[in-house]
Length: 150
Image 1 (spheres, rainbow, N blue to C red):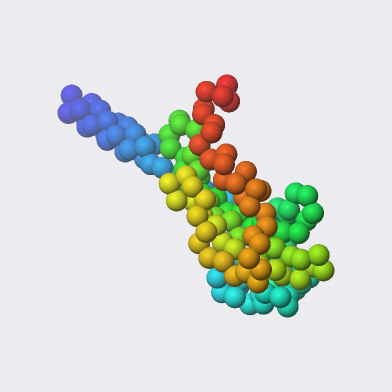
Image 2: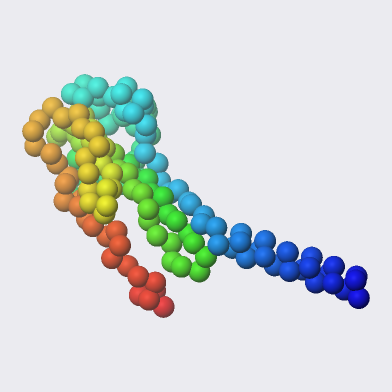
């Protein structure tokens, strides 16, 4: 009987450890955003699309209408047990170009309580381009539920 009791205790301990690890959140990162050091190498008003591509790489997304901006997007998703993945962090770097392909401005956007927040900006002109695309990109946060994917 003592041997059977040990086996039951061992199986109970294994089940408890398995249940605790199943309740641990898993975070996954998607996309790429260059860091401030890499962006510091880009000179607004001097660098072109070619030099930007060689220093920080090609973007995952470009401007929808004119292609005048490049967008680098990075998101972090939280996967927790059987729930649908939830985006917990998003960062966007927008590099805008003028009609000649020269860097016009560089901006870094983030999310703060579901709202778009400008984290940093290097602008040569007061006109900020591409805001509607960023609003669309950030606007989809939280609009989906797991019930819609059945």
